Image (cartoon, rainbow, N blue to C red; front, side, top):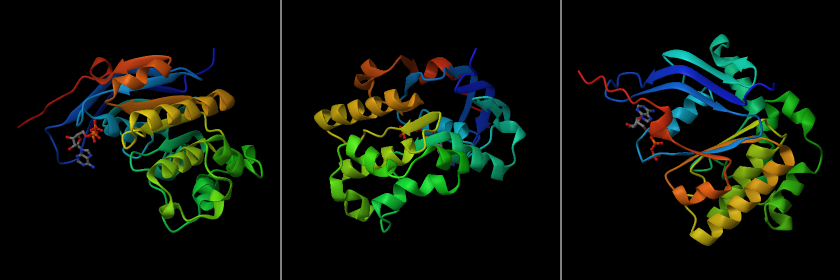
Amino acid sequence: MAAPALALRDVTFHWPGRDTFGLRVPDFQLAAGESVLLLGESGSGKSTLLSLICGIVTPDAGEIQIAETRLSGLRAGARDRLRAERIGVIFQQFNLLPYASVSDNILLPLRFAPERRGRSEQGDAARLCSALGLPDDVLQAKAGRLSVGQQQRVAVARALIGQPSLIVADEPTSALDAATQDGFMGLLFDQLAATGSSLLMVSHDERLGARFDRVVRLEDILLRESRAA
Ligand SMILES: Nc1ncnc2c1ncn2[C@@H]1O[C@H](COP(=O)(O)OP(=O)(O)OP(=O)(O)O)[C@@H](O)[C@H]1O
């Protein structure tokens, strides 16, 4: 059987110096090709969990596995390379380089990921932009000059380029109205169907749930710990 795209086992984490908030995830898995919407209130720890999954912060204990690779066995540099190779991240604020072109923004993760670069072909950035409904001449435009909705699509193209096995998205629709949100989700799922990538999206918006294979409430996978002094 294929390894899950993502697995967390007995993971615990506290922000250093902050004893009042901590997470414990006994067991959570995302199957290869599966899409999961993780719902949670503001401040419940969604972004913290994504930072753990992406290897940006390390757990106090427990194991996080991306496909067959365990993060705990890796040094910081190797974790960064694994993230670049295997995970396409769509940040809440998109995190585009505003003075760089759309093309450079989309191709950026490939610089740090030779395998992912090897899977992408000349013209993929243009194909993704077109599939995501961006104008034909967008590639040379400065990312900071685009509308919020367009920047969001560029952020999705950057996450999808080179077909990483796991896409992690942090409330990417929070700045959109309902109609634009629906169009955006349709485009994202069309692209996922084409690449076979798994998707873990966190949000507080239950209306997004219909498109996903599974909707999970954060409180159902996570035991929140409070170590108030
Ligand atoms: N870098 C950090 N250093 C210390 N504490 C942090 C840090 N980032 C988040 N926290 C704390 O962790 C807790 C959970 O925050 P987190 O951002 O993970 O929640 P969230 O569910 O993503 O919230 P939102 O929906 O508002 O984005 C909060 O109490 C927050 O103050």
